[in-house]
Length: 299
Image 1 (cartoon, helix red, strand yellow):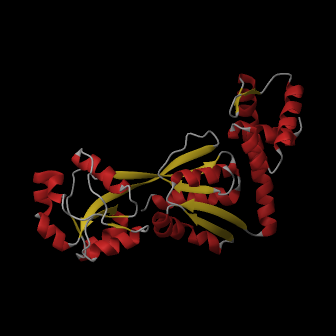
Image 2 (cartoon, helix red, strand yellow; image 1 turned 60 degrees about the vertical axis):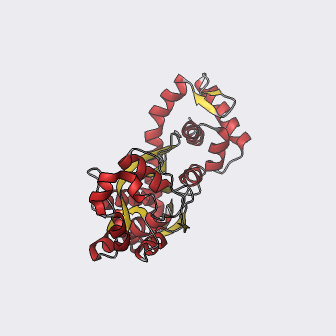
């Protein structure tokens, strides 16, 4: 069988769509359709069922993909390793949330730049946008809190981020401290202004449900689209906010900010590291993927 046909077949199998496969391969949709039809004639059986939106593999298609994909990925890895030796560098396209990417992901990948890897980083607070760009081939790795169900994408848990409800010491005095909050519940915090990076208060809403088992009725007093700016506003005494512990640990240690309550089980937010299926055969993506997972174990 023609390896080009098999490569197109595996791409369609992973993408679930002739259109998406064509985008990833840099081909026209009619060319992809023609190659699949040619392969189906060689096999003598249909490989995909045409659906109103996309395609689904037949049992024969699934069997062929299971047999062929590991070998194609291995050939790609060999070819890319040889090419990397000749060119000396590759470019990695990463997308992730602004603060986490800046404070966690980039420091972990910095050493790879010294080894010849170029980085191009996009920042996005919308997980859906990052995953859509990954599926379309615009990015190589995507960090986010959403695990995609798209069969084209593979997600690995990266890190569990602990959430902390913080304010300035002055607000702690007004609310009576953690014991008063534990005893009185969320009503004690009803009149404390809220600072958030988003009008919908996603972090505060999740915290209220996890810790107080109720929905927050707060309206944000300050909205600024950067968690570092949120922290500075908290330290300045503007109100309370829910932030990742790694971001506010220095402020907590110095006393510039305090935790309004210390729940027995703090809320967590899981980050996932997502790639397109098969792309870990590319050495520069595999190196970055492995470096992030190893770095996360020490965060």
